[in-house]
Length: 110
Length: 112
Image (tube, one colour):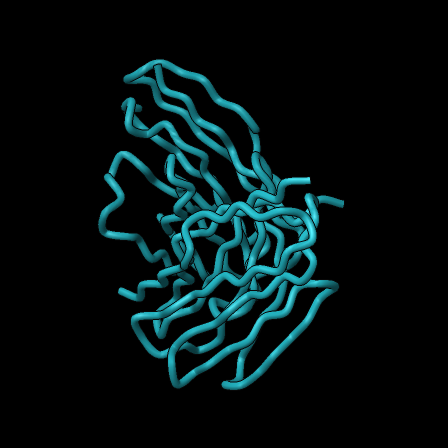
C-alpha cells in the first residue's frame, strides 16, 4: 500500500515566521493534495499538484511537487494564528483509494 | 449548503451496542469514503464505494459495514461496539478516486 510520510510531526512557530512541511511518498505520485484540518473540524482542501515541478500558491501558502523525489513541500510565509491546525497531504493510488500522510500539527504563537 | 454532511456529530454509547453514522453528499460525486482518525490524528481509510463497487481496507473488522442506499449516501453501521472503536469518523466524497476529496465535519464516537 502507498505510504505518505510527513515531517515534521508537529511544529510550533512564532507568529510571522516562515515554515515548511514535507510529504514523501513511498511510491510514484499520481498527483498530490494538501488539506488542512482545524481542530475538531473537517478537512479543507488547500491545493492539488499534478505535474512534477508544479508550484501553486493560495494566499500565504505555497506548495511544490517534486515527482522525481516523490515529494511535496508546503511552505507558509509570515505565519498567523489562523494557520494553526493539522496539515495533511494525500494522494490517489492506482487502485480506487486515496491515502493520507501522517499529518503535521502546526501551532502558531501570537 | 453543506456539501458533505454527517450525523450525528457526537455519539456516546456503551460497549456491545450497535450504531450507525449517516453520510450524505449533495455534490453529485461518484465515490464516497469512510475514514477513521485515531488519537494521533492519523487518517486511515476504511472503505471506498464507487458505482456499487466496494473496496474494503482489509484491516477493518467485519463489525463495520457500509451501506449505500443510493449514490448520495454512504452510511456506516457498527455492530458490537468495542472500546477501541472510539475515534473520529470522517465521511468524504470525490468525483473520481483521483480528484480531491470533500470531507464531512466528522463524528466523534465514544464507547464506554
